[in-house]
Image 1 (cartoon, rainbow, N blue to C red):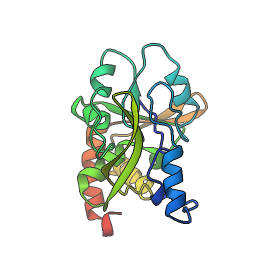
Image 2: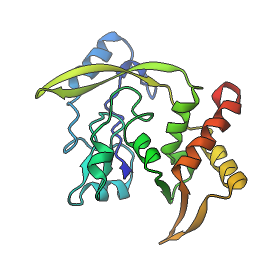
Image 3: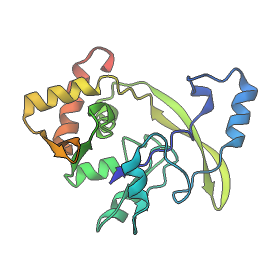
Image 4: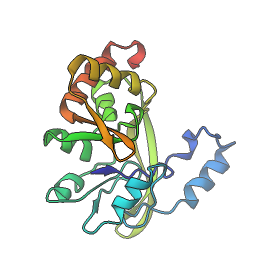
Length: 204
């Protein structure tokens, strides 16, 4: 399974880089977005490995307009078929991998890109909530839908990952081609991350 996020399909009133100047711009941005389609919607800043993975045969992609995941193999359908709109990184495929006792492999990136830590962030209850929105297909027609989410913040994930590796000894590090690979059990990582985040001031 890999993250295939398309965060360009997000609530324009929350955009910050740059923010939109007024309500008219927000309305125009909402109206211009195409509905999420798991076969057509491009990922955003996910990298070459993810793009290559999506081109493989028999890949299944979940239905979340912002935080989709793609999977291949005997459990692909089970992992991707249920992905609620609300709290997309706190439910759905990430939570299913947790229940299946899966593993996390970071290839050439640090824990700042460790998507499973967003599951820990959600379960820690330390982040504020916000209303999100995105365009989806409902009975074949485009609709703008709103849903609840947390205001995630990955700034502390690198420090969390360093502490996890040092305190648990559960992270294996090795070379994969020219990249550094980091392999760890997801359930142990998430459980550790929940407690780590709860110890931090303001959740980070």
